[in-house]
Image (cartoon, rainbow, N blue to C red; front, side):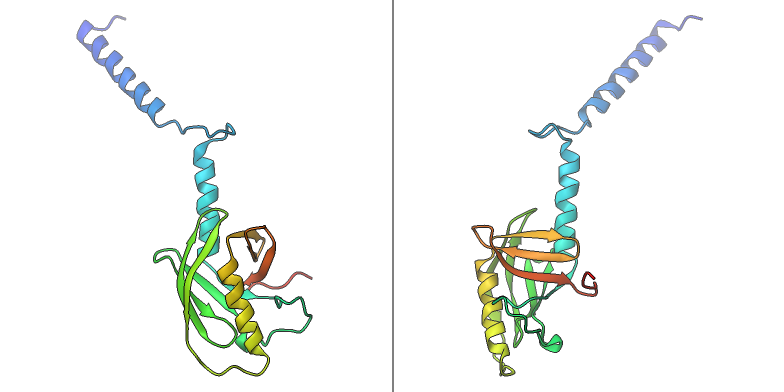
Length: 167
């Protein structure tokens, strides 16, 4: 069975256009040879976890074994849409700006209310604010957010609100 020359030309052009379209939508490879699309998904997921959760401090920064008063537990929530964070530092409501990508996290100038602290929580408040100001990176491990300084040292560990501690 033979095609009329005009139909053969039409079929050939259609196949060529589809072939070019298929090639142009092929994802690029990054330097490691991985599909770039996968890296973007990983970045997106990391930021969604970071910004889609409320994070509560689980361990005092001074390394002491004293528990933190659960009613005044320092906590953070980052808003992906506005680039702002809010929460409390153990005494006061806090808010400010932040910048984040897949591994880096930097908090801008922080504003807070000026309420009286429960005795003992004033050091928790100061340490929490200091940790935020020194944060340059983060690491997510399961339900935990670990804030890191420029040297990669741990400043603060926070747990996703509503998740339980490991047994």
